[in-house]
Amino acid sequence: KKEFTERYGALATATGMFDASLLKGLSDRLAGVMMGVKLSVQKNDEGGVYFELAPTKGGAAPIQMREHTEFLPLTATQQTQYKQEENAYLEYRDTQKAAGFKRDGALERVVNNVETTDHPKVQRLRKIFEAHPEEKVVVFATNAYAWDTIVRGLGLKAGEYELLTGSDSDKERQRKQRVLNDPDSGVRYLIASDAANFGLNLQGASVLVNFDTTDTSATHEQRIAREFRRGQQRNVSV
Image (cartoon, rainbow, N blue to C red; front, side, top):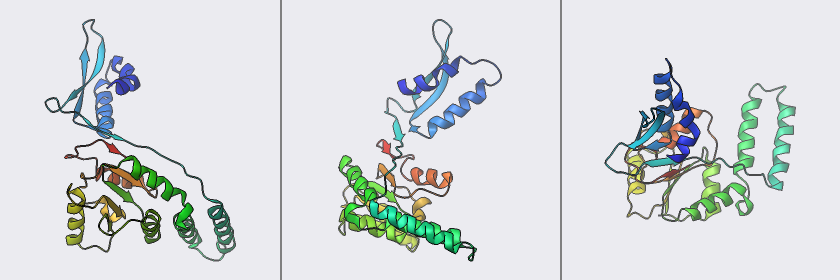
């Protein structure tokens, strides 16, 4: 509440025809980062206008979503491979129309598919897991070499993770959703492609990692909405 007021509180003193649209815009913004609260404009004893954040349920604590963006350096090996792929692209692009797509795929492999002993993204992912020992985690990664890097790099064992991809049947999708949401199951991690972006409720997890960035902001929001949705009982870290 304090953080929200410090950021937006001064706007509550605005008067005129834009009051309603301002309130709606902030309400929509608030809904993207916190559930269980409602926003209204109130007046204090002196007649001043202020924003009020009130629980939508009797005394229930709001559920928050906090997003963290991290930039990790490439290893020396990755930097060398990256330059090699860029040079290969420059030689290739004049003769092949699809050179841009070829380069993108090659660079993704450089970033996600190296020896996992010193993989910077895997090391950071391990620290995230260690920082949330009592929570379940969904990791979105876009391709098979990234999935393999995660599993091998972290040494995940059968029974503690599930892999959900576009090749899963609807029955398998529902099973994997069920075991992740079951607090008594041994499954702590779901590694998923964007096939998990629609039709699944994954509130049993409260940590979400984008191992790869998304192509669009809509896809990014869809990923987050798997966990940050009605029924979530914990604050969500992205």
